[in-house]
Every structure is written in C-alpha cells, then in structure tokens.
Length: 167
Image (cartoon, rainbow, N blue to C red):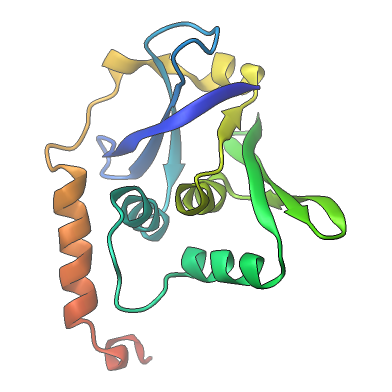
C-alpha cells in the first residue's frame, strides 16, 4: 500500500468530478504521479467541505457517520483503495471498535470524505496506482479554486428550500 494525500478535486473535460490522490513524499513511488478517481458531485462537495474546514448549517452524511462512530466508541484507523475492477475503484474503511478491528467495504469517495473528517491516513494499493495513475501534468484543474466551490455550496445551502425536492 502506498500512502497518499488528497491533492484536490477537479473537473475533467466532460465536467465530471475527479478526486486526485498523490503519493506522500518519500512513499517510494514514482514522483509526479496522481490517481484520478471519478466521484459524484455531492461526494466532491462533501470532500471539499471537509478539506476546507467549512461549516455547514446542518450535518452532511459524512458528518453524521463521524458522530455515529464516536457514539459507538469506534474510530477510523485508515482508508485503503484496494482494487480497480472494470473501471470501478473499491475501498475499505478500517475501524477500531471496542470489539476489535472491523473492515467495511466502501466507495472510495465515501471513504475519503470520512478520512477528511477524521484525519485518517489514506493508502492505495500499488497495483491500483500502477494501473490507473497518471502523470500529474496530464491532469488539468478547473480554473475555479476549491474555496470558490465551497463558497458556491454554502450559498446553495443558504438558499435551498426543502420544497424544491418534492416530487
């Protein structure tokens, strides 16, 4: 496993959200490589909110997960992106619980959003990085900064009306 950090959230040329994971310095892997993992817009915003330390008026789903874990005297030990199968990334959340270690299968986006809230380390399997990693220069970030996206999300939360979601 290669320890990584969240480099950022970007939009690809099709305007799809991508989380970029980069090996930590000294991780013993090729320098300048990143792992792009495509995620949904809600997960992208949740990760941005956590990495920017933004405060939301109501807890997001991943905030609720953290509260539940604490209530159960459990904590996130680490996150692992374990494999890539037919274009889909798979991850695990490794927990410490009063009953012992527990490993939960998860989408990488949810696992990373949880790690961003708990400061849990993130690692990627070497085989996944070798198969799907790309040179950092091959990835273009959206011109808007993360701060702009978080601010846009805050404005959305301030203006949203629950009746907008009625069918």
